[in-house]
Image (cartoon, rainbow, N blue to C red; front, top):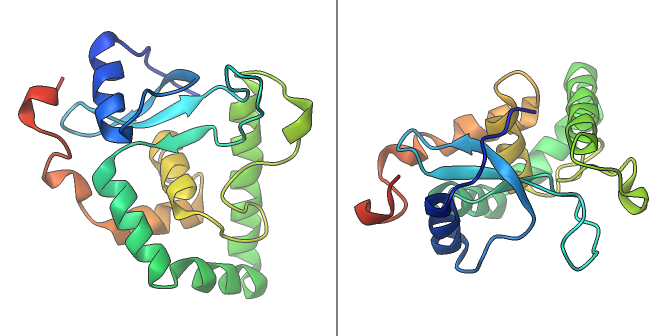
Length: 168
């Protein structure tokens, strides 16, 4: 896991993106080409003690909105069906699950979520936001369904998600 530290400008941009203060951020896992945070890595336990399995949290509003559109169009169900019939895809998705768990382990151990990744991995697709966040943070080739979802989003970063004054 390769994370950039979060600075004060990042905190401000994240609060704008999320419309609330970011919680338990371990670092910036992926930046948009414009320089703004797009995916953060979160601690596996929130400050109030709640276990939090979503290590890679998609913060870019444009990408998040586009994921919601893809979800409403049935992409998650289609991907889940393919997992049941495509052994190569299922094996790659299992490896993505293991990679996700390994990344989270570098941030800490939380027994309550041991063996549980996020987004439905390794047997189904439950959340494209998680898969896209993982694919952007880990890079192409780690999460095959995340990579597919990123390609389906298109170039969401071509129009900045926030005003220029929020740019880093």
